[in-house]
Image (cartoon, rainbow, N blue to C red; front, top):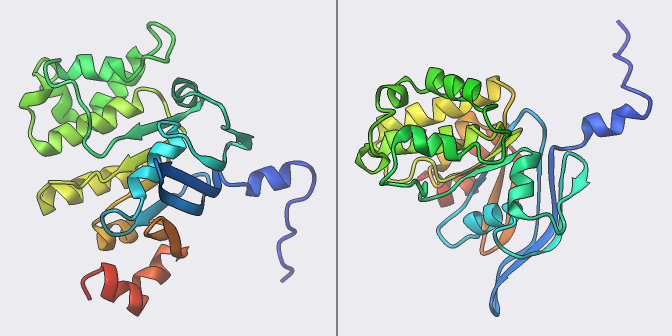
Length: 250
């Protein structure tokens, strides 16, 4: 049997290029360098985890990618540099962030929060996406007129993810989706993340629950004091004894 012929022609490099390519990223808070030369690649259609202790720079990485924080280095998305591109334009290009603390509008209804997620979309074009979000999260549809601040923690996380999906992202940045949730709810949320991948959404996942996050990821990076200390296939990292001792409770 002959080996498959590798792709040729001008389209081949682009097909192999990651959807998100972060190169030698430096981000500072005043005199403190929170990220020091971080490089992360997220292939299209994959779930990539970033794990590490508190203060490792995980949330800083997410905010730098979104343009919330100024940084040095290069961030490329779909083959184009995001240098100088403001946050709103990054969302319009197909990047959505679910922030660590969810940042919902507590005094607004579930449906109003979801509609705000579509602010970059053409007026009226989001209605079909609202139905899609409700199909994915039936509990949100049941509570669509309920104030977001009265939802349980798991429901609020579903709402935060649903709001991000209203912008129709190609790349979803998920920052600590299991934060403060019971183990059973965490499993539900991570199953949702796997479902997003099945639907063609690429995911960059920051998560302190390293074992659970590696279990659903294709690749992973370990951040420590603002630097990448280890990276590789998630299944391989999950078996690494030094990683197990440091981050997985082994």
